[in-house]
Length: 196
Image 1: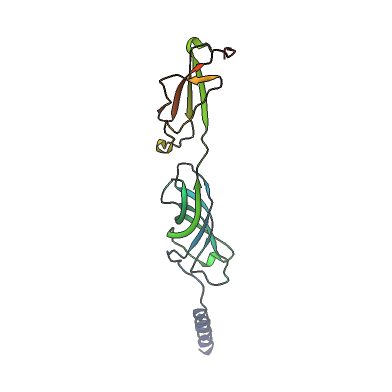
Image 2 (image 1 turned 30 degrees about the vertical axis):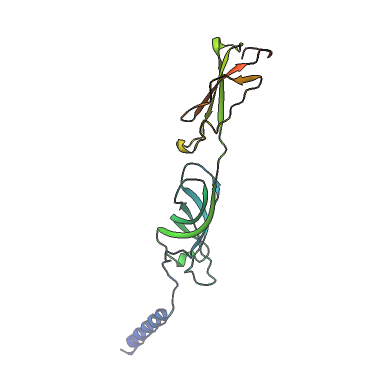
């Protein structure tokens, strides 16, 4: 009986000691004090950015805990963003195993820039009868990297097409249709002409 009692006391003692040890396990709170480092980039038509580091407000001092995630911006538009939503969060760092996190964090502070992208333009010229003669040459310029968002493209007035040894046909102007700009030129009389 005595031996059994000692085993019971020993088990109770171990349980009491374990109960007194605080294991750091914490669900990080949503708030604007969390700070995300996101990768600035050129405009690509989406509102997502890569998040490469997160400083959490509720991590114990000295613990090595960060995260990588996908950042969701309020808009896909060009601009500077100071608040971001984090999804697909994966904790990183030596002490990350002691922590838990929700799958989404809202209103996280950041500083990320979406900049204008340089347009990729293809140009096609077409002359009457298939030759560059004295008459008209139609120049068609197409912006190919629109990301299916035509509303951000230049207007016909903002788009410039210039011809070497050619002038815009009198009474005409550049015409825009979706992502294509067309202008009609007259080749100068004194230009040496050749077929294309």
